[in-house]
Amino acid sequence: MNVSIRQIHPVFVGEVSGIDISRRLSRDEIAAVEAGMDRYAVLVFHDQKLTDEQQMAFSRNFGPLEDARGGNITRPEDKRLQVGMNDVSNLGKDGRPLDRESRVRLFNLGNMLWHSDSSFRPIPAKYSLLSARVVNPVGGNTEFADMRAAYDALDADTKALIEDLVCEHSLMYSRGSLGMLDYSEEERAMFRPVRQRLVRTHPVSGRRSLYLSSHAGGIVGMPMPEARILLRELTEHATQPGFVYVHRWRPSDFVMWDNRQMMHRVRRYDESQPRDMRRTTVAGDAPTTVQVQAVSSA
Ligand code: OGA
Ligand code: MN
Image (cartoon, rainbow, N blue to C red; front, top):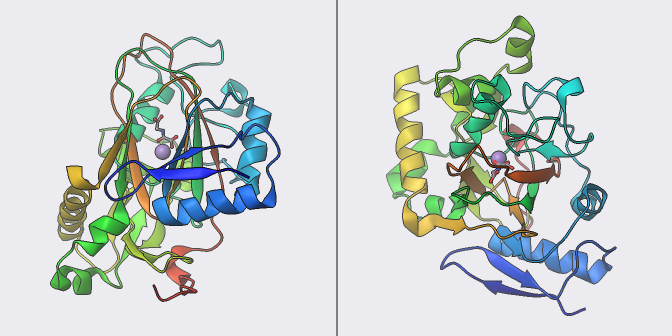
């Protein structure tokens, strides 16, 4: 095995070489990637030409895939990709860019807000893995913010204030902040708010991190405006340039990140041109409100 990982940002992000993720990996290779995730939280791989089957097989090395139902408003019959694949492209089933007024397109614009994938689910996602099949000619960078570095840099009073806070997350909050306020009864039921701790501890490294997301729209026991101001302040703090890595996509790039410790967002791009990005998501293993204690005290 000759996997090697080089840190490419002052506080996080590893660039991986010496591995072909389209193939079945050895135990050592899987362990090396896992250790890289625990340490760097975002891993970048170049020149990984993948089929959807290969992407799903690689992702399953790190746990079962998340059940994607309930995470978007695309009807099953309108889906472009098979079950197991999350379509984060700007394309419809016909392979062409969605119309400007398309509700699916407008909903997907929410990916341009800082978020952690599936924080609106009772058990939120562990890893997300994103494969660049067609890169857009203008913009479309993906940015990552390190919520461990952000937590570490808080002052002691703020750390004490937020230690045991629990937030309410819903897709209706993130989309509501974009002015999308109309949902069917069925969608409202699907988007019912869920509770997540604001401070998480990583099960392997023991590092603490801020668990923020555009889906967070309230804090249990706190008046709404006060909660929203606090969440905004923390988000501004957490996404300052020193904690952010900007990924400029090349075709066949593959990036995986740990949603428990990172936020991300995509930047605007030319939506008249295709941007075909395909994500797989590894499921989390427990609700954040019953946080598993760290195995190490590092
Ligand atoms: C995602 C996401 C960003 C992008 O896949 O979860 O937010 O660059 N995508 O498309
Ligand atoms: Mn996302």
